[in-house]
Length: 467
Image (cartoon, rainbow, N blue to C red; front, side, top):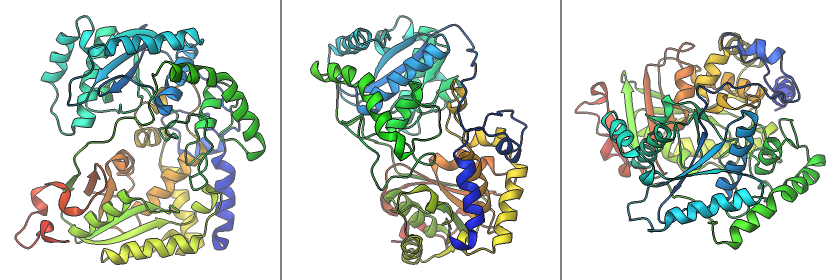
């Protein structure tokens, strides 16, 4: 945006840098001053000498998707960097009975990886691990189910972690930092967005660019040591893609020849849920990134928030111009205005703020938030990697989120469940005491399960009766 050109030029410059200073007490402003253009691997000391556990979740038979393929290669590379073996463990999480010979498929996957130069130890299936039943029972006694698709893998993999004596868990496809795994050392994958069935596909033209989005070719090149930059410039992309494909395609073909691959992974099956906590408010703020295309889940969040209070969408329309190959800010603003209007709400765009005011708010956030806040706001396991993981964009994005969350004081805040850690990390900047949190697949308000604090219940507040 022309009125914020100086700001966007600065954001563009620092976004492509790695944050080399990871001291928890350093402010984001301080780490941005020390940012570097190339990543330098740092030593990560494992809490034990055990292997890096790589979970492979499945329903009927274990199969390798494009996402799992990239992740197991990344896990192997992380193991090399930290001098740990990788132990592959399968876990049946479907409601049906898995195939009787599923363990043979796990062994075949490990055999192909070993033959192709990516040796991974076979741990077996969780149900067959020695002593796992005892560990599983112990974990079960300390765990309550809320979301099956999250809690069941969390419990099984945590028990497998105990049984194999692992030093960390790699958070592969379908595995997140739940009640149990969230307390364990973990290694997050470089990204979770992959092209189904094709681990070498180019980035879709509508996707966000690095470092805001994820690029599977960049991810493979980065973990393989083919690049140590934050992203791949267009001039380098074709050459990097060829090098990645040359190194990895034989393994992918070998897995396909033996029938061990799958096009799609596990479909999400969590219940649509809304949790409302804190003081009841008559207004709610929905902070949003100005995406080119508004997702169905964003639409659901806005509908849910509007069912409780008068909603205002606070949209970042400043940074999108830097993060897409082509973008029309006017079109983005129109789309979000229509979304808000359809839900009976309003919009507030950061781009409409006074330039000096916006710059000052971002500066204040950067000088107040620390690396500890950034780590707390990030996915579980991200700081556990042996490579640089945080970029200048991560710091800027958190600061802009802080501005968006604090723009309307005294209102409740609505967010997707995945973004709650980031919201909580900002709580010391703003007195956010009311949260509306949505989780699960997109869907209409009436298909959500509601969990409300007593303060939000009153005879005049019939959320279930709204369209």
